[in-house]
Structure formats: C-alpha cells, structure tokens
Image 1 (cartoon, rainbow, N blue to C red):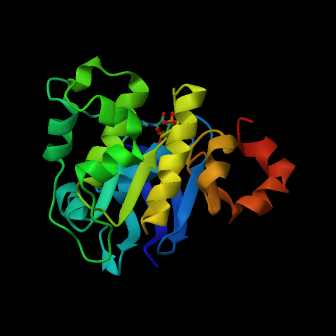
Image 2 (image 1 turned 90 degrees about the horizontal axis):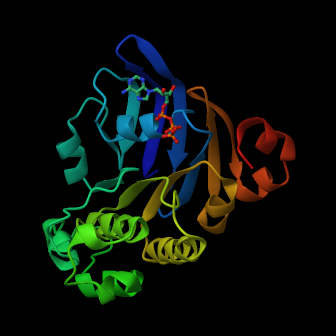
Length: 234
Ligand code: ATP
C-alpha cells in the first residue's frame, strides 16, 4: 500500500472534526475523497501532511508511520501537497516558480523537468517568463501542481483541483492528471462534484461530517444514486 489511514481523529481546538477516518490507497491508484462543503476533506489532507497538531490514529506512507511527524519531514519522504488556495510566488516568473520546487530525483517516483511540465500543462509553456501574479486562477492552479511535481513526489494530494476552473481548463486539468497517473504517480484528490472525479479516479471515499460514509469503485458509485444523492452535491 502506498498510503494507509487507520482511525484518524482530528480536532481544531476542542472541536472534534474527523472521526475514525480510514483509507487505503495502492501504488499508482487515483483515489477521490468526495463530500460536500465542510465535510472534512481539507482537514483529512492537512492531517495526512502533518499540518494539524494533536491528531490520533495511524497514517502510514510507503511503510513509514508519518502521523506525529512534522510537515517538512513528510514532504521530504515524497508526499506532495497542493492546497486548495493557490500558493505561487506572484513576483517570480513561471519558470522561477518551478525552480523553487526543484528536488533531486527520487527512487520509485517519476522525475520531472520543466520541459516535461510544459508538455503536461501547455498553457504554462507560453507564459514561462510571466510573473505568477499575472496569471488566471486556473493557470495558477496548474503552476502550483507543476511546482509540486518538481519535488518528484511519489504521491500527491490535490485539494479540489478543478474548483473555480473554466470548463475548458477543467478538461486540460483532467488530461494532465491522467498523464501524471500514466507516469506512475499515486494521486489522491478531493472533490465536491462527481463529474471531474469520475474522469480520472479509480475509487472513491465519501466523507460526511468527518466520517467515511461510503467507499467503492467509481463504477459502483455510478450505479448507486441513493449514495450520491445523500452525500454529494450533484
Ligand atoms: P471545503 O470544500 O469547504 O474545504 P472540506 O470538506 O474540505 O470542505 P474542511 O475544510 O475539512 O471541509 O472542514 C471540516 C470542518 O472543520 C467544517 O465543519 C469546518 O467548519 C471546520 N473547520 C475547518 N477549519 C477549521 C479551523 N481552522 N478551526 C475550526 N474549525 C475548522
């Protein structure tokens, strides 16, 4: 298994947010965490990457227990995290943003170069000399992913990668994620809407009020309208 989560419980102050969340993600799988606004997707991701103190349960990445470790240590093990809000350096060009993320090659993970990333995200190629601050939200989202890939992670967590993107950009994003999977990357993404997740995911977990309510393949979920209606904004 690439990532295993057992009995994850997370609190913000005294507010108990995640209740015994579990998941298992295999090498090279694309798995979606689905759920409405406020269901606990972002909190799950933040817990996995060590950004929330005081969690309980076990999170095992590539056989190494990472729960309790600091975020920078977890990232160093090859876990890439792309948060929901775009985190680019607005004064640096696209190319410079990419170089900020550069790390040595990692065994068991694809090695990315700027040229490969410009092929993956053709929009970025046209803008390589442009400051990040002068790009659209969708382009900044792509740049955030590309910069994370420059760290050569073996697993990436993408928090709502399609959120706020124009339909045409959503399509490009889906193509890019499909190619990332083809390169051997394991991908976990969060989504509120099934449509985008369905384009690229093998399996899904549905989270509601901080608990896992459903898990299955995309085909099984497709065949289960009651579950979709109960837990997702369709
Ligand atoms: P969204 O799509 O809005 O990001 P989500 O599924 O990612 O939704 P979370 O952001 O994980 O949901 O939020 C889960 C719950 O935790 C919500 O009830 C939210 O109000 C609460 N929450 C989130 N951040 C904090 C915080 N810093 N302090 C206290 N409560 C928080």
